[in-house]
Length: 170
Length: 105
Image (cartoon, rainbow over all chains, first blue to last red; front, side):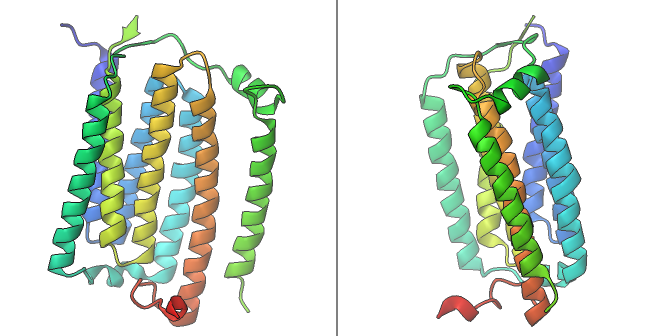
């Protein structure tokens, strides 16, 4: 069987995502955890682009990698929380957490593998165009999303006001 | 030309991400590190939405738009959570989960 370029890209991205997400929750320095989170978000955007959802990948890069990680880094530096990272949970608790997550992973993988997905290829030319996304986002018919869109704008406004109110100086 | 990647491979990647996020959520003591773990969980679900949409219903966009709205809601949630954490730090100078116990009752 021949291996084409997209498959190589996918498997490299998959390995990077898996390793960086494991490192992001196990490293001892919180700034490094934020950096590994940034790499995981880049990998997620790459997966969206491999799937053909280039707009979603661009949104992921802008909102997550451009906005949220910067917010994390600023708040890490503001709260000087690097010295807090050395307090670990106790050994029996760690063992029980590890057991719980491994059992959960086994359950999820069992469900995924016994579901019987037989789909193993997608048409590569099918990139979702920006015009279709825009028309579906502001249309009011069935399978069109103007109501969630407007609701989301209200939510973002409320969150902005809430963030300013919570974080302001008294 | 088709892209021959089985749908299970995407799901395994998102499962690894989800499990790492849950593990970090249980083990981390710093509130910001806990929030980073929550981001991993949210990302795993977004990948699943996009993958199921692409492979199972390629003519429709529901999963795509759900992932899009999920990203926006995750951004809002992170902003509010970081505002709360910064306010907690301003009041008690600590952001460990063991120190924030005033609402335990």
